[in-house]
Amino acid sequence: MEFSASIIAAFDPAKKIVVLTGAGISAESGVPTFRGEDGLWRRYRAEELATLAAFEANPQLVWEWYDWRRGIIGKAEPNPGHKAIAEMEQIFPYFSLITQNVDGLHRRAGTTRLIEIHGNLWQGRCVREGRVHEDYRCPLPEIPPMCTCGALLRPHVVWFGESLDQGDLARAYGLIEECDLLLVVGTSAVVQPVASFPLMAKQAGAFVLEVNMEPTPLSSLADASFHGKAGEVLPALLQKIKGHR
Image 1: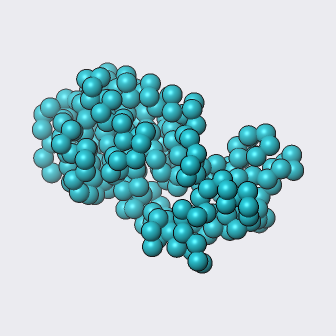
Image 2: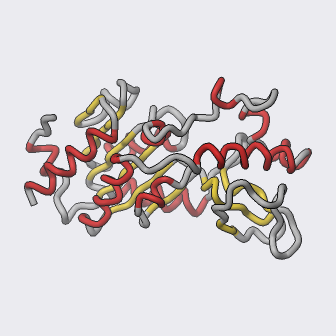
């Protein structure tokens, strides 16, 4: 796989690097999208269950679906793409990851400087106090799970019809506006507001590099675009970068 000198130069250690990931990188670990046919569970679709209204009407049903999802995702392992991103964090002092994925695979791969902008499937949030609890047990021993205060926990994810966490969004905007290089991996870049991140970075003067299985609306905007598996492209890119340090 060939990487031009301009691509390698864009990964200067002094520069601020941001990686943006979407469902594509997790699909390589066998994580389904849980949308469309993948999302069909019993007689429900994801769009019917991943809402505040569904949770308020039947929290047990919603948590049974999430427990089923956790059972599937819990068997997945971080792939070489996840691991290459985690290694980048160790190499570059000014590095951040923004992920749209809720599966927690980036954390398991070792990445620590990250924003999970859509939340995390392995966390529950108290509906009364807002406190977030992490729980990797699968299956859950109690459905629906409860907070220590006695209130219900809800999945700590962003549901259909909900806004992104304003603190996470503000941090993400700040990183995008200040970055020198944006590496976009496994996302179609069509869902707002995250879809605006590459354009924001480009307008601020950043080098934009895309890795995706197929062309996306971002491909014509990016400075360079590689079509292939993240688990193949990113390790190869990392080795090239390390060879020129």
